[in-house]
Length: 217
Image (cartoon, rainbow, N blue to C red; front, side, top):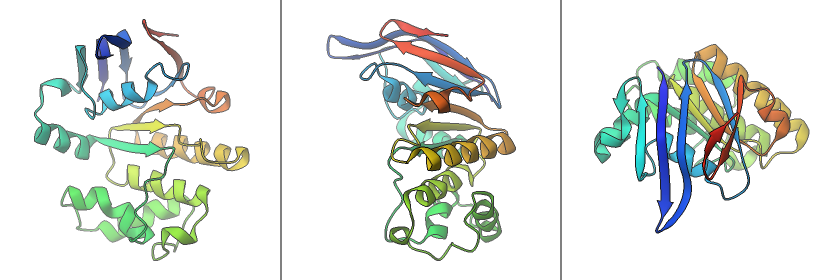
């Protein structure tokens, strides 16, 4: 499923955040986006997911015009096709690890065989047998592994990662990036990574720079 962004522009009032952003991400491709603070990298990622609106241009995924969807249709598209990993883990503290990982399946009504899929994902991210643990008993690196398992458990076509190693020490960050890339490749998903980490960006198939006037290699 190809993601296509054409001449995208976003403004806050009269102030442009970015303009003329054109980008194609092919199925299975890993694209890293870097840029100065405040240039709108996270905002661009939110536009890709239909979480934020834009003022000009189009975002399409597998031929679906995301900007033309109403709120309910966009939410359903996102649940089916998109996974998220953020700098903040966004793991729900009152749910155990398995319940956190199962959330995308629950939202899609895919509870059938979910136990085996969750167990498989926890094994894949190096947390075997930890489904009953509560988030407050885990380290930061383990919490990010939970977030990766949750992002991939419903087998999305597009994975969006916003500074996923920003809260981790360098050694843990390297292990999490290796895991994130490996799992994305195994699932055949496209990965778009926003990062300040040179080492993380260097692993991408393509490295792009976002500026106020567009995006360039």
